[in-house]
Amino acid sequence: MTFRAITPDVEETSEGDPREVVLANALAKGRAVAARRRKGTLVIAGDTEVALDGRVIGQPGFEGEAQWCLETLSGRSHEVLGALALIGPDRVDGEFTVRTGVESTRVTFGELGPELIDRYLASGEWRGRAGGYAVQGLGSALVTGVDGDVSNVIGLPIGLLLRLAPELAATSPQ
Image (cartoon, rainbow, N blue to C red; front, top):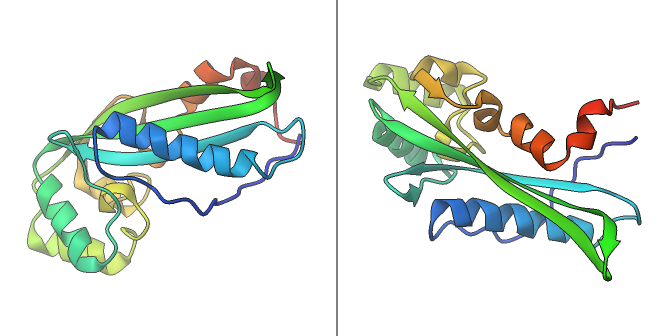
């Protein structure tokens, strides 16, 4: 079995119900890759979003936005939503099979002082990260609690993946 990572060029949405947003983005990515794949290929596409007060926070585009994200999340709990869309490899009535799901994990930040925020921003780790942080790296210093699947916060909800494709649990990369 061969694994290959592809970053599709799709327009992601950020407006609307966070669960619908994350699922729509995962499906858009999956469909973009599925349209170009070889026959018999399983496409696993995902998206991760941070939601606070029912709204998507998104990925900060520049340091000032990252600072706003961290200040906004400081001392609060938020939801990390991870969606997966598995497309194929089989066809049913001419259409590829599609399996989807959304995982939710609650993350709590401690009170973040300006000095800690400045140090984290200087690390650059916030770039390309939903909510402007990475729990698996230096961002772990920002977090005081995780309720749910930490792999979802990292970016690939393994439990959800295995629920959608239990056959993958017995498969190991060659």
